[in-house]
Amino acid sequence: MRMTPLFSPPGDLGLSAFAGVCGVGVVLLLALVIGLEAILFRVLMPGSKALRDSALVNLASTVLGIPLLGVWANAPAGQTGNWSYLVLLATWGLSVAIEALLLRLLEKGIGWRRIVAASMVANAVSYLLLVAALFITLFLGSPGV
Image (tube, rainbow, N blue to C red; front, side):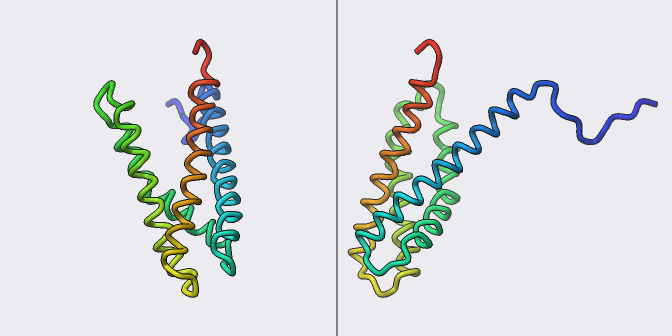
């Protein structure tokens, strides 16, 4: 009788290494977004707990926004380009709404308009950063392009 181990390393560790690098990249990018938004929150919402607020609202909007990536990934063949703008706009709007609502719960002493404005500005800047990172990854990092 031949015994096989329950957990065996894959024959090709290239995919695992790639996934690890991508995971680290995502964590670093999220940390950069949290730091950037914390700076913006500090400026746009004086008196707020900017770093705590930025970390909590970005984690929440990231977790709740992940299903939209599935919508984009499951777009009809050849249509991801057309869907990209709609999904990007939808995720930005969802992020603004989620973050504004959570900021309202976290910072009760700050006016609603100031919170919404801060959320809109912070997410616009963050999305510019995310789109730039995506562009660099897809177009400048791809061989033969």
